[in-house]
Length: 445
Image 1 (cartoon, rainbow, N blue to C red):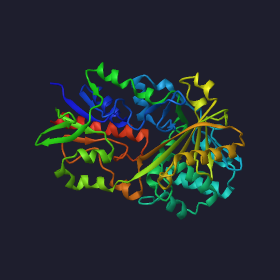
Image 2 (image 1 turned 90 degrees about the vertical axis):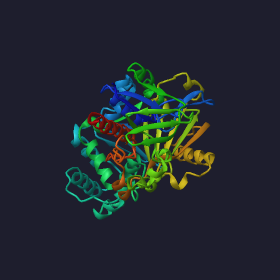
Image 3 (image 1 turned 30 degrees about the vertical axis):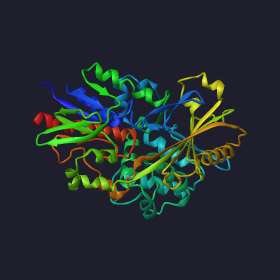
Image 4 (image 1 turned 90 degrees about the horizontal axis):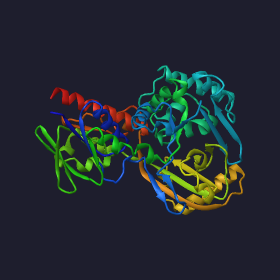
């Protein structure tokens, strides 16, 4: 008889697990509380502008091999646009600009050369940072238990390059400030980015994010598996060798195994009380959140001719030109000629600020930096208070395995033990790991 696995949650982790299992001839039932898939990667319709916006602008990298495998399976990989090589422009409030450009030489040499040409920092700062990066790539430096801040301090990295490179880089890849971020996780990211020229190139979705993942519904249906939307799991039911879920409609659905692909705080709620006292599950109480703020601005004209730009010395960290990146609905250009997204990562200290004041303050920063007379016509602020977990050194060492003490229960999510930060790739990889553990269990059963 064909084995059945229930997956709770149709985010990237859950979808990744589902694809892996179905491709190994296992029936999958995915239960999703919302009416659409994608988890934190979703799009919403904005009535004022008449277009879709995402819950946040996702900057991807060529190293996202597990996430891109999902898109290739679903036939949406062609909707991703890749840089030919790593190019990252920056600008400060005075309008001074610089570019980290790896285009001159292929592979690692191009990145290192681009680093040396990076302006606004002294030669000594570049050499010291390159030396640190090389030591991390070659495992010639002890980083266990260290924050990025302490790593930079120990290696006497000057403040100019910390402000203009290390801080923005850490916020971009980990959604954390350097005094919180795990140096080990940062090292893992660098190793993946430096594996090949293609790995370090950045990528964007040419369509609203939901369209990348929405084919999963039909894909599963064609493989004799299903996603049931608007279906909330109230609790797990665990009795001896049998496991099941109880839904909000009081249905009991039995399976051979279950993969919970919920955020850690949601998983904790569906776990039966007696299991919460297990030492393994008590770690759930240690997880903390890091916030991201996305600000969508519609303007009377374009403000930049670059796809994206990092901003230095400002509250605004990144600006993305939606008119250049997203080609889904060209007719909107006529209503609002300019459309940009601003991103603020590691935003716990400002998450409760007034949205309108925040939007106008950040818009003024952008106008000043780009010396633009553009007018703000409309705005929308999206606050993700639980965008990611805080992967500091202590938490990173305690991240839960995808295999739990309950033999037929597995967990997936970017917060589980992947060695990666909380990104789309981290979520996708966790789904693969959870599926592998589940298949091992089913094969031994």
